[in-house]
Length: 228
Image 1 (cartoon, rainbow, N blue to C red):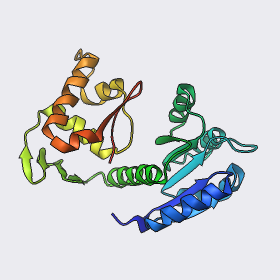
Image 2: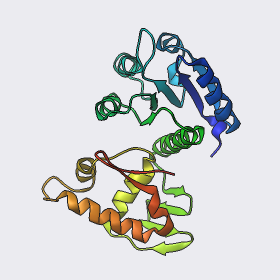
Image 3: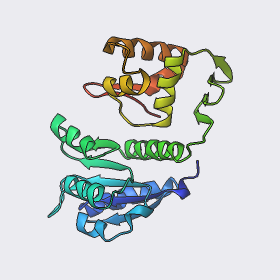
Image 4: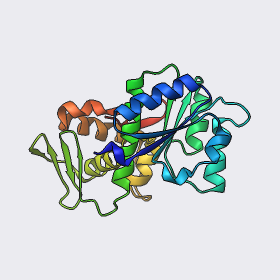
């Protein structure tokens, strides 16, 4: 994937941190701009950015207020990754309820931020093409049309539910899905399924995809996601 196709906006009132993030993201090939306040960010053409890295605790307008405003007023769908010193469950839930795609607590490593940004851009790229027939991530290749999974050049058999769950994860890298989300998307309304069914299917998928099973992460209290 060519990172030069992705433009990142960093919104944070810590200028030194912004410059560090900008330097390292540009080293990865991303185009990066900085806004030192939510108000400054609102003056930018937000629809031109692929990802917004957004601090929660800022001056007059917080990151939460900024996210709520752009989602409500501009109907902007640009992915948001919150950067915050807060790490309570309520804050995390608030971020996700405002349409956040990810949430990183300070202090964080630059490598973690880069990995999360890449995950969001991969997911965005996958979702931008509704006609996509093959999803490739590392040694995993999922053929949507032929319903076939290839793991490191070997064909691996999946049940229909396993295939649909893995497709959901691979099309939405980095996005957390609760068990309820997975049930709603994969099982029909007239079928009674318990949460344990989700866990069993995911355990089977992990086993079948071998070393890539570790990429299916269980975020305690929130659900499952596929990370790279």
